[in-house]
Length: 355
Image 1 (cartoon, rainbow, N blue to C red):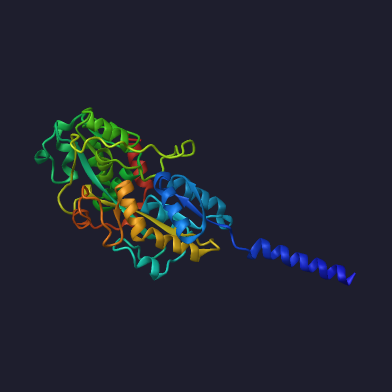
Image 2 (image 1 turned 180 degrees about the vertical axis):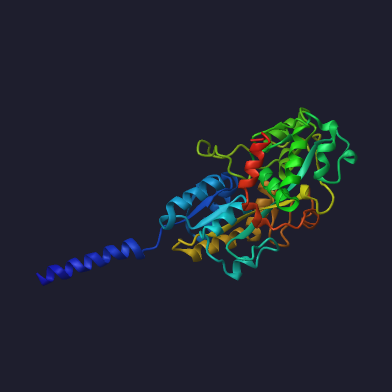
């Protein structure tokens, strides 16, 4: 009987060790970034670190909802988001662990004071225009004055349902106030702007002469003229092996990028980033993955693959991109973590009929 009890106790201990103390076989990443970007970077990391990696794709909002529902049972180790607003929400819900200086000291800018996540790449808001229809010298110095250009009535595009446009409006609301932002939006609607569900079809319409100008991110113009892939998860990758890449039009295609005066909100920098989940049982490996994302290899790949700006100083960008320092000078100073204050923005866009 005693022998049986001892054997039973040993079996219980073994099961406990397997269930609780054993290491996971793979690093799990929840990614709001696209398969076209992430798959290749993950393959590079797996080869470099000899670690198995599994990626779950979704929009930032979908992944945040999943993390909240899974709570401390979540299999996720890394949350790699497309927006700082999503990262801020993750911090507020105490989902992300504090990162060591070995990770947060690598980016040259935009590191949050709480050190719960690290910036990975930067995008910039711009005004794209058809150079055959618009003289750039006639465009306003500030995005705030765009509604007063009656010549763009029915000829300007925007993407009210898209995250980067909503980030831009949120930044305007935070800096200029709700009343001024509502006034700007209502005045913009008087131009009868054409709404698009995403930026790629809008930029194609711009190239085709269907519209003359468009509020967008810098890389959509570069993607049209120089090729490349979408960087944000857009919802159709479950059915497709990869997102369709933009086939580059001639560099002489009549689409150019206009940047407003230095410090104008129309040039706002928007940051992607990643953090380690509090519930991860392999935080050291997760931190190593973040360090890889900030390596010259990964930063350079992102710049060439999706035309986004690197976070690590000294990383070269393609010749056709505006130099990093110049792009940063154009962008206004803004506390990016405040982009998580999205609900009033969505309410406002619904109120004016843009959503």
